[in-house]
Length: 203
Image 1: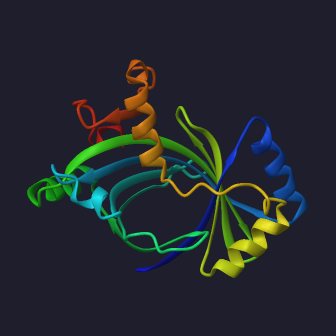
Image 2: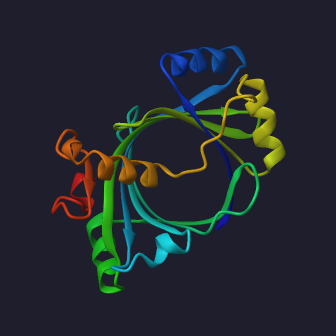
Image 3: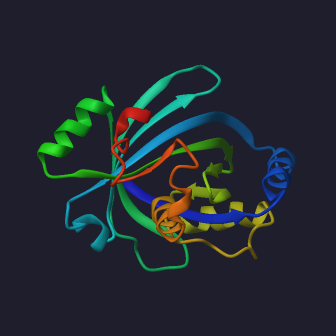
């Protein structure tokens, strides 16, 4: 359990490649490249969504080692402020399907499943993660233990003047697919709750 402090910034066009070069120039170390399958859960009356909370099963595979891990995460409501800050509680679990069955017994249903590709760098006490999200494009997340740490790294990477994105990936993806229902079948790794494949099967 800990406080997650994060700056999320959209990277249009070739900005992701430019950022990777900047990270190299600043001496950042590439920690790992991951493929993540994320399934989000809520009650039938969206109790978590309406209270600004999140519940997720994530299966991630390290592309360099093929190591696989399953993490159950609860995210609390966002605190006020320019950066995203919220209490996050995580637990490693052995089996995504068994964990999903426990959540179902407790009244939680899958609402959206999507795959994300992530390159994680370490710089000046922060994690800098470049993400590829289906339909949405590229983003960078700078995560640290304090707002000061995050803002310092943000400045070092030349991103201090770039606008921040406070919305979560799951919220942006759900909104995009509801606005463009014709795209629901375009990507096999994105599923909404009314699709029978919206469960940890992708994981």
